[in-house]
Length: 195
Image (cartoon, rainbow, N blue to C red; front, side):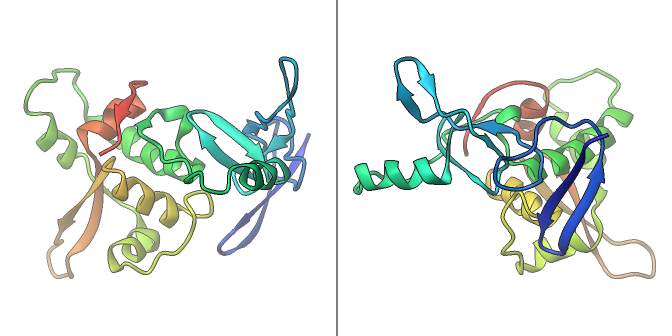
């Protein structure tokens, strides 16, 4: 059974399973291939994890070597700015965060949707522990592929989730997280314009 190692803000995580090919630069799972053209209809196809790849277009990624080469050939070109959000182009931990929230929503969803979907989404909010607290306190510098906190922060910045404060009896108010209608749309396979 294959073994993987992912680098996170809390150190390395080792895990086993058949999750696909390894990144060419580390032992993490490769989710991308380098799309840099190398001649004819061929591309580099180096296997990349999020840490060792760079997004250069909608579903287009370069390895670090080709990213530096592309940068040198295009010095004035601004970094790619994602204009549309799709589930398959979200950073890994943003997908994980949204997956937790979608699971909570699905447990409550009766399939009767209409104009009142936003309050229903808020009613399916869940707490996300210390990572959630870090996000609302604003002390998260993690990349969206490094930690759950980084993924949550990214989702908040892109309008896919929102914070719903809850105050349990006898305790301080706690941050709970819920998907926005755009977050739900992305998790159900739609493409939404970045807010």
